[in-house]
Length: 307
Image 1 (cartoon, helix red, strand yellow):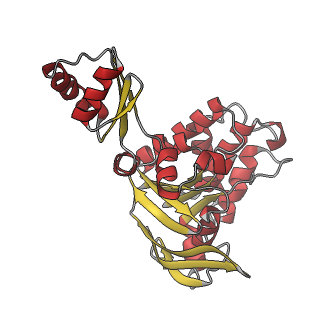
Image 2 (image 1 turned 30 degrees about the vertical axis):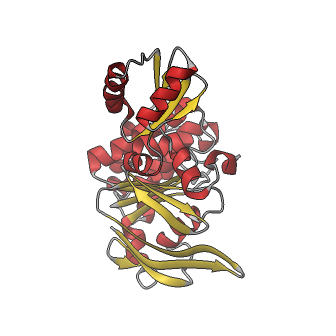
């Protein structure tokens, strides 16, 4: 669905995207993760034909983003960071107008608008003016506008920004539902690490305009960080013995051990220590986050970067 080779964008002396090569298969749900200024939104704007690349190439839905802009636009939906509907217009009217802009006959545009209003839970507010809608309702209306022409590929640029936790969770459910029910290929950028971790089957980490990691969230965390297992003991002497047996790090009367799969590692470790005459008093397993991955790869915390 997407294929880029050395895709590059420069703004005067600043290189915003620096030679990105990637492929996204039909039906994938992919999250682009990185701090502000990493090149996420610029990459999406090139893939959606809004700005031209200064180097490299990109094909979307089989068409070149420079030579075949019209064909690309017919096949994609794009929801940017701002709201797309006119504030003084009614939501239903905006959807119908958007459908007509894509060439749908009036009857088909009305029918399609009705389907999206129902599936996105906008039935009670669709005939109100956009300015009277809540942030979550406006965001769902934006998604409906991006889906009115049933695109093969949907781009979402920071879809959850500015939403409260409840509306953010509801929006995530809608995004996952789109892929499950319609097979839509979805590419989104996000600041929310938990969002990328919970809904994306693939995470692409971008920093300084380059891809620095690309895999499933689970494999990224296992490969670059791993689980941390903390074992507590009755004395520092027992902790020292355990650290030697398990190749761990002693912290007072506790030992920290790294493992690919902490819960699976614990029973064997306890048995090994029991055989050596060392009793384990407590166990704690912490699972890594995507922020831990970013910290390992760059030496910086993504959370701190965003703050």
